[in-house]
Amino acid sequence: GVDRDRAMAIVYEAGFRAMSFGVESTDPATLKKSGRRPIPQAHQREILDHCRKRGIVTAAFYVLGFLQDDWNSIAATIDYATDLGSTFAQFKILTPYPGTPMFKQLEPLLFESDWEKFDGFSPTFNHPNLTAHELKFLLGAAYRRFYMRPSYLANFLKIQNTAINEWVSRMDQRVNDRHARTEIADISRPVAC
Image (cartoon, rainbow, N blue to C red; front, side, top):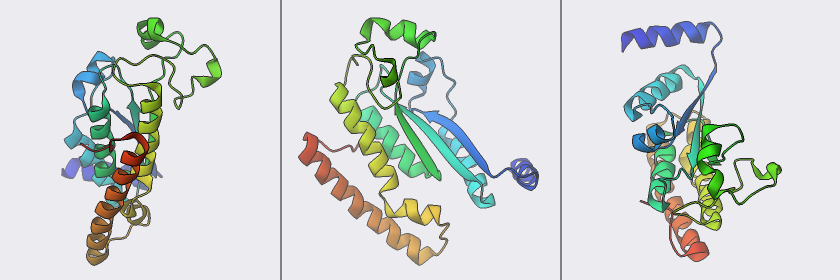
């Protein structure tokens, strides 16, 4: 509301130009089971809209491969990331780091002993629903689907023209269909809900 607009104006005038936030997953139950506090999607969208209006760059972070995740839940997270439309997005595979509660929980499932592979891009444990190959494929699909769409470029360039945005929206669907065809060719199923 008005208070949030005023607060955003104050922080912008103080030099605030970029904000990052951890969305991580679209499923509140998954986040709670992982010891994370879910932020309601409506609140995420509201904050992002305020930032966009002020010209504040936003980065959203997503984690793929929580124990409860499956192909469909990760596809929903990717879908949400493209719909939310932050300026940037970073996707990582769940990585249990030594000394954390997550490490203790997943230690019996660990197959990786090379600490250099605990980088967020390499699977390190046997996931109950997804193979290591599927997790890596979904990670690649997340980046492709987020950054290889016309609306990402339009958003990044801050294009406000309605006619251009309508054309970009139509092109997004064509690009999305092309991604689906490529994914089916690569792994026999698209990353789509």
